Each structure stands twice: as structure tokens, then as C-alpha cells.
Amino acid sequence: MVFLQITDSTAVVSGAHAELPLYELLLKGGWIMLPIAIALFLAIYIFFERLLTVNKASKIDRNFMNQIQDLVQEGNIAGARSLCKNSDFPVARMLDKALKKIGRPIDDIEDALESAGKIEVYKLEKNLSILGTIAGVAPMLGFIGTILGVITIFVHIAAKNTIDIGTISEGLYQKLISSASGLVVGIVAHLGYHYLLIKIDRQIFKMESTAIEFLDLLQDPAA
Image 1 (cartoon, one colour):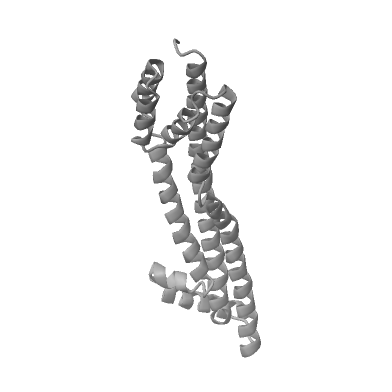
Image 2 (tube, helix red, strand yellow; image 1 turned 45 degrees about the horizontal axis):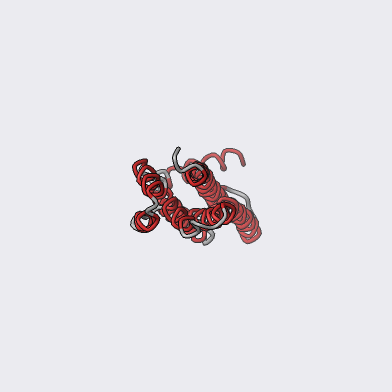
């Protein structure tokens, strides 16, 4: 008889909530959904802001390096620096710092390139650690929601002194929705974080290759 009563209650509850809009369903996750939602919007904002920045930085015109090579071979360092200053991407800023050291030992120029490169890498990775933190924290927020949902279930059982779907449904909603939402946000942030890392690693490789090419040019200008 108890089994039949629970089955009937399940059918009633399922019928009553089958047409719940998504936002109403998410609201049943409880107050913990607010920080999870904030984490999601923050992760999306950081991802696209960094993606645009990295894509802009990766657009290195091959003609730019040819022009730099020609100007350096002609001894027109001022012209090379002017070209760098008018080019808004990391490699240009790195080469400008190196061109300032022309006339000094090659080690000084190499140090200038390395220091400028570190600054540019820092700019590319700005706020990326926040995205990584969200990837780790969001599932924990969902786990907190799970604990709160279990607490809600026991509070309702204690208050009504009975166990049926109506008594535990609110806690189950909070438990399942919050944990699922936290996992989804964590996965989105995790994928975005590692995708950006891959793109930044590629950009760092381009910067290092350009720096080596520039040093080779200085050591053998006729090449």
C-alpha cells in the first residue's frame, strides 16, 4: 500500500512539473544558483575577452619581419623602431625594446627581448587564472547545493514526520539542479581555460621564433 501511494504521488508531481520553464526549474536549485550563475557569466566574459586578445596578438604580418630585416640591414634603426611603434602586437613591442639596445653587446639585446617577452606573455595570460579557479570552484558550489538539498529533505521529513515525494521533492530539486549546474559551469570553464592555454602556447612559440630570427639577423646582417 505504501508503494502504491508513493507511485501515485510521483505521477501527480511529475504531471504538475512536466511543463516547468527552464528558468523556474533552475530557481528550484536554491540560493546557491546565484553564485553559480555569476561564475558562469564571469567565465564566459573572461573566455571571449581573452580569446579576442590572443587572436589579435597572433596576427603577425610576415611582411612586417621582412621590412624590419630590410631596415636593419640598411642601418635605419630609427625607421625600424618607428615601424614597431606603429604596429600594435606583442612581437612589434618586443622588437622595439631590442632595437633600443642596438650597439650594445648581443647579450644585452637578448635580455631585452626576454624581458619584453615575459611582459607580453603576462598580458596574454591576464585573468586566465580566474577562469581556472572558476573551473575548480563551480563544482564545489554545486556540491554545497547538494548538501543543502539533503538538509532540506531531512528538515521536511522531521517537520511532517512522513516520507513521500511531496515531502522530499524540494530538497531533491535543490540537490540535483545545483550539482548539475555546478558541474556544467566547471566543465565550460575548464574547456575554455585549456583552449586558451593552447592558443597562448602557440603565440609564445611564434614570439620565441621571431626573437631567434631577429638575433640571427643582428649576428649576420647580410643573411
